[in-house]
Length: 467
Image (cartoon, rainbow, N blue to C red; front, side, top):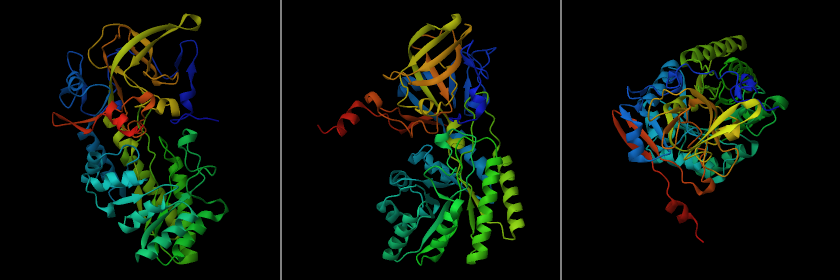
């Protein structure tokens, strides 16, 4: 059964009003819900959206649309909130959520390490000047070249994901005369309440070594036995966009029990336990993420209690937030191209609002049935709210950006539309579908805007087409 990524409540849909049950008619269609927007976003007296003192009209005029707009101070503040909450732990920014030199550099400046999962992400981190010791490498199918580079650079840790990878790491480390630091990714068998494609700790999927059948234990034993590998800890990641820490608590308990068994059988006291990431963020009014301090207290408590019960010292915790840091710090700015009223069953109707982007800059709605919000950003409106669907310009019926939202009934071509919460897995999963160039990323800080990822052009696309 497919379950929505933020939980079963997303399945509540009213077929008479053609909208989900959680989406109420707003009293003020111009109002911004603070939990959905970066901290420096506000609507001015004239109704125009501003970020860090800059109007979206000026940003659109200078940088064009569509564009991802990053509130850099908001991102940095979120980084600090997690490092402060997990003061006795290591916080890794999950680069897969969004990867650029400026963002990775900012994360490290605010006290985080960085987790990468490909040679490309690693290249960006190195190009940003990050120290290899502050990097971790993930991935279920790392190439020989990626493994060799990680060992050559003395990366802070390499998360092993298969027996083949353990063998390769030993061979590479021996040939280089090095001793690689390795963690073993444990598949704990926890079914997180999330979409099946981003639930990553149940047994029937590609990541990690399962506890069932003793695979995780055997993987750790092989690393310990390897002459040129150092087992520095166990790793678990149960999924993404998770709001309830109960699944993390079950995962932590199971991993701690494995760690206790390894210590008893092999005499190794592992110094670190990584509980992964996947912490949820607010995309719509129905989402209620926990503060970092509450998450830290909950996870710390369960690990301490389980370690005490098992009679072992508590390892140092590490976590890997990505979405919850960068996601809320970014909104996507579009221009409306057409508005089409569509009459549906029982006389209900919906406005189809087409924008100048779509599935190429945000595939998550099509891929995960993800939910987003939107607002007219270039003016205030006195019109009544109308049920709308924001769609893209691509030749695909599933090219939907915002499935259900109330927008002013007078929304029209030329209006600017802003979609919050697009920092994670939008630009990083972007494509050139229909040969549409990907948008730029514009960072705003201290009243100034700068491009940190340039807009692609048709010339960029043609340069790769060698004929």
